[in-house]
Image (cartoon, rainbow, N blue to C red; front, side, top):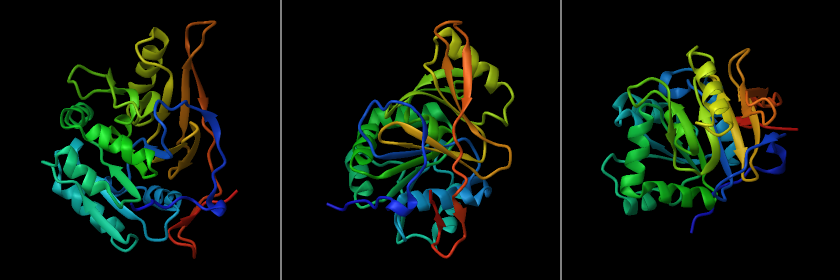
Length: 268
């Protein structure tokens, strides 16, 4: 069985704050918005590649949330063509068995954004959810943007139900909740805080566009931002006041993209 790459000591991450995992897994990267599917924030992909621990990682893309938008699939191949030993995307009609075969040998699986509920329902109905949890448990680096970030959590704040921002259940790889696009959609900040304060959502992670949060297998989190002034936040309910409180997640500023050690470097 192929063993995915892991970061070396020279690419260790400084961590801050903890979110406790529901399942055992190695590493997950949740992105608030942007990235290659929108031809923005190329440093986000540099961060993923560096975190993979591989010089030429084998990468798979899942575009279910955007109904396998051919433009996003093409942008996936364009972005990583020179940086990966092997690129592949998951066919829309794939079964759980086909997905398990597809995922074997990958170092990174990246899930694109789009319709959160469509993505979650498809994964549950087909059994793909458990296949990807199994892949995460054996060391594949899971990454996703927007809906592709929401799906990994216990719950998320999403407008994909057509009735405004509402709590939706993810596949539960990670405990807690997720809210992407935290700075680009003004209604999200009050809605996320209100849902957590009311107990409709558990405490969780709010992520601005252009920001990635790496969560390790122990639940510790660190932030990488590709946009000035953007960040990520741990939002929890205060037991004393019953209100939601927000705290910034530590940014890891020592990462530099485009160095000799392509695609990037993480250092203490």
